Length: 272
Image (tube, rainbow, N blue to C red; front, side):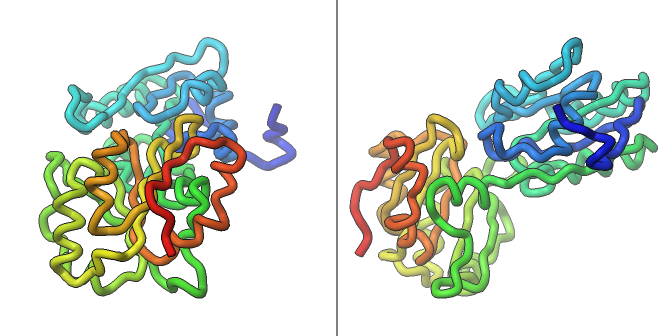
């Protein structure tokens, strides 16, 4: 039990919404504020990628309201979700909007927050560990390392309609950042890798995919940029997945603590 008073945790007031990041999967990665909100919320509006064990931490009697969005499947519309949050708060509920990863990293938390602000609904943002950080850590791939990179770029693999994002400067992405972390990119991976290589990225650069990061079903595939799309198809890698391109992938050979503890990752070819 969390001693909220001793820790100075804020009151979760009726008629307000907390936009909370649940992290990439492992319940152990929840923040104290997330646990605090789960213990007090009247309604939990949760995403598809929130682990059932996390939902099990909600207080007895809380309503669990599914609002999951999955690519290629019937999903609630974002305006409808935002309107639901507003209605629930205006009815006097303590509303916990529980989102996978971090609400503000490709999580549409900004859209929901703006809708709440426009409706005059009080809200709080509770950051979560995004998959591009936590997922790579569980794969034994550091996001930065002073011998490999001093910059990193996060990129979404599709736009709001599910297509390859418009307006991306592929030349700048290929040449401007030593490490690229791609979210929701598995579907378009052949096109993305082809564009990066055409823009000057080396086809023999290390790349990796972390599928279902931080969960018991985590799988890690290590390959090369020019080969990883075919390798992913052959290995039947499933979403959700995070993809990383850069020399930091080589460090996994020494840092893959998770596979040593829970064998089952994929390494089709060791990198020199």
